Image (cartoon, rainbow, N blue to C red):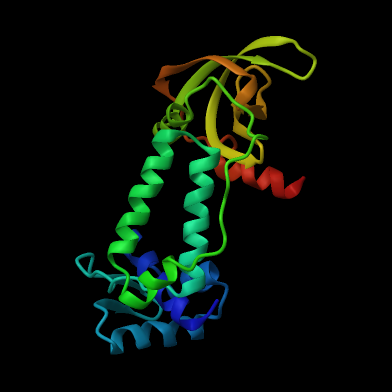
Length: 227
């Protein structure tokens, strides 16, 4: 990570924290030495970023502080535009509309030279006939993940057997052209992945699931890394 990026990320990290963060904690998060963090903090303070604290105690930032508008280079703009196109082609209309709305906001902040770069983009995501349709609402699934709502649905497995599942939805994962819903399955008492195109009768359950350390997204991702 370049120094400029790390300084920017340190500011965002401190803004998210509700208590003082030590240099050692920051060093672990950004995979650098505490001495580098001390220099970074001093550099930020020298440029007027309202950080207070000291070595050995921790650092806090004035939450009213906002970074200057983010600037992008031509390659970053092209990568964002490609991502927006992929969202439009591989999710649903509601999510695609949100992606377009976000892109318009980004465009509104761009200087004239980068606006010109938008008209010269040569990397695109085209609609594909390989897209596998599903009947569940993609947006509803995302909302259940965000709200930590349990969900129930009928699932048709590869052996053409249908079972009723109750899961704690954790993430949507794209393996184009297939989308997977990852979650903790109460029936199997383990993490499972479910293809969206094999889900039917999807119903959110009113109660939220708890944030148990061995059943949350971090535990799921750790299992994937271990496997």
